[in-house]
Length: 67
Image (cartoon, rainbow, N blue to C red; front, side, top):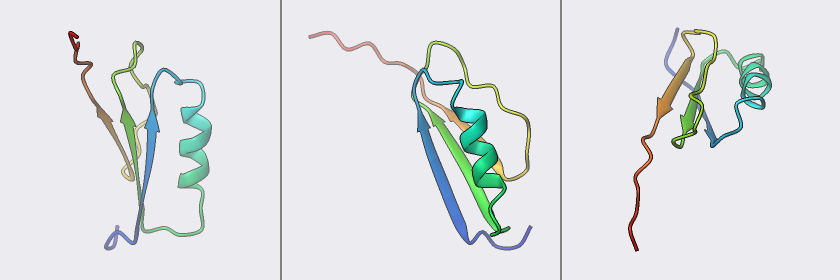
């Protein structure tokens, strides 16, 4: 892959059924030099997406806050 021209960031929290469509849509764009970053904000069910060299999944841990 050449130098990255565009980064697309998709935030997600407990919406795993929406992610495949969103990721596929971004990867099918005519711009080839893209990276897609999915940020899972501590969902109860981990994000499960097919491997792709232009896709990165970042899973954040839930932090309990005591008030």
